Length: 453
Image 1 (cartoon, rainbow, N blue to C red):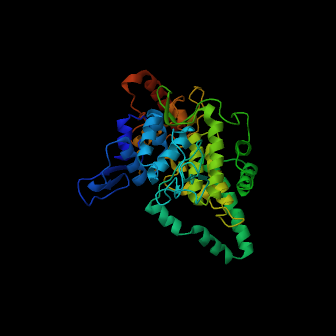
Image 2: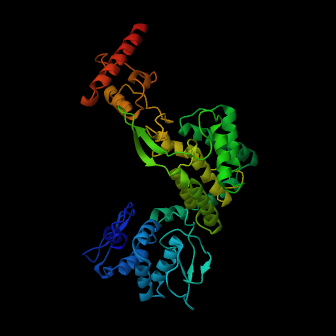
Image 3: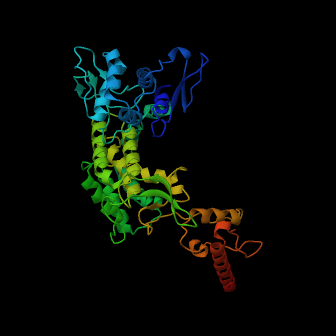
């Protein structure tokens, strides 16, 4: 039902929504994180208008599905749906969203006197507390962004529980009963530790001066409006040495992932935005930050959206991870969420969180249009006496760049097996000769090391 039915009927090529809706045969269905199950009486008419009304009422607004749908169906079809119920809440939302997304107008007259409704149901999705009124549709534009960038976040029980904890107020209470001298030392420590942690997540150990400069940039977050020029200035600070990295917006494609260990071909986990779209996307991201915060949207949700959107766009060749964490500081600062003079340890907390990028075994960023790609990978953990050396080396070899011999990739972490000194990598049938040469090199390196002792 709803969006799932529209995607299937019109063969829309896009990722499915994270939560789908359906009508169950039972009268007491149990929903889950992946499925919203409704009773048989909620089943909509099997028409374009029926599924659109069902989706907007029970699933909220999915701008991705609607954008692809409006490119597929004709304006007359959408206009026909609106004409059936011109004053209905969901048809007015549909009408407004069609013209907002497409930039065109349907062949419909403006509405007369009728009570206005919000474009986004605030009980179902996070939105601004108000916005400009569209007199044509009698719809309040409470969307947190613009057509260029407007991710929407579904309200969940977990998010509502976190919001009720009011962590900003609790932080101010702690600050209020802390001696100023202790507070000043703690603030300085938090700032320096967060700067250092931001580099450690990326596998870097910069000089103290560079760490201090980035700490100062974190302390100044929120003092300047967000713009492309400001982001490029911050990239220059975080990179430091421009000799080996192109500074500024990417001029070529990019991806986040790894390389095939035999062929060296890229294996992307995520393909970055096209270079031609970067300026438009970043301008939309900056407007989202301004609209969402000024509109009273939850600061933590807004910060998460902007930070995720930035790293998803991946506008730079290097520095995206550190800048996306800086953006969290920026949004929280302009929203007044953190106490004055105090920064929350965003990077330090991310580094210690089990699912953070700093704990992933392999991270690589590359320009897929250039085989001489820039690659950064965190080192694999060294084997402990109780761990399997064979399994550890296999994991390392499968996730490391393929252009170096095995013994050089190990970066000094080779250890002799307790049973024998033979190479434990088993070559595949497609690359026997290559693996045999690497096995011989590995064996020679082991023998050389054993001769020292």
